[in-house]
Image (tube, rainbow, N blue to C red; front, side, top):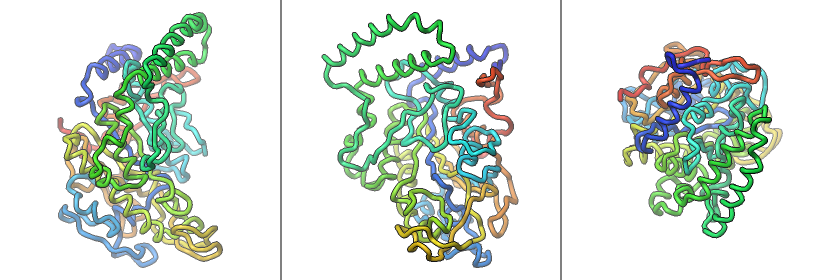
Length: 446
């Protein structure tokens, strides 16, 4: 099995667990992934093409940023004002042309070609969760606000799936269930029942062949720690934030999800996903701007004010609180969109979509060129990595593959991917990345 020098994989797990558990929360690196399900247009965000023919460039202009030479789409004025606090990557390439494939290629590193709702291999966040696992924690270490579509822990087992937070954090009645028990008498009774159940379950462990008991025990330990610790409920409680802070992020679904993510990493959570979906996207609730779904330009114009506000508030707040070296933010979707605009008839009227039967513009899936941004993590910011051609179709400088992306994420989290493998369902050791190296500009100098 894979090891670090003479260290076995179980030894590696133990070493990493001890290291993670002994670190203070403010010393551990953390990651927030802001996920744009459906795939955002690179041309209407971070890689505009003002000199391209009209059938490529779209109706929006470019604007300068506070970084000399960097221009982005006019739909992102707040990004333009803080461009010195993030780095743009314009050259991510993979071969996943559908949502499941794109997500799973980027999150697992495997060249997935089938359409699977759950991956055959664990995603990198589940792997990081496994390597940093500590059942003594009082708050889950991997939280999805909510979980990313089509991702999962695969053969690592259900213990390493994210703790999913659903609902709208902006709603007055929002509450994360099963995070605390305030009545001490109830807590004592729960503890008594837990002890009794463990006595009955001892004999089942030896007979367990699928690891389900181990998973259940891990769930149980985490659940008990969560329920018995007041700090857990406090981390999820947005009412503890000032009104001005909540306003700063935006009083909407995406803004308050980002605020919750900041609270969680500040409370010691290492891995958080934030998904930008729902009504703020438009009629179909995502960024999948095919002409049959949305008018791509109406959709982008509708959603980008919320997007611009939430993402930039998160980045600024992390810097203001001194979290920018420890916490990295990465913002991406599964791919870009086709540079050439196409037209089709709408399948339904709604926000950003014309009445059914009306011809409207769209952009389709485009994994040949994807733009994303990175902030925090101690990296040098105010940079642009890679470039695409004059129409945004293909990468012309610094192709970055899925393995390079994953190696960068692992490097930030203190994991050497070349030294770690996991045994799959067939008993084979599977390296956590197949190829790739961390992107030098996105590696902290600390």
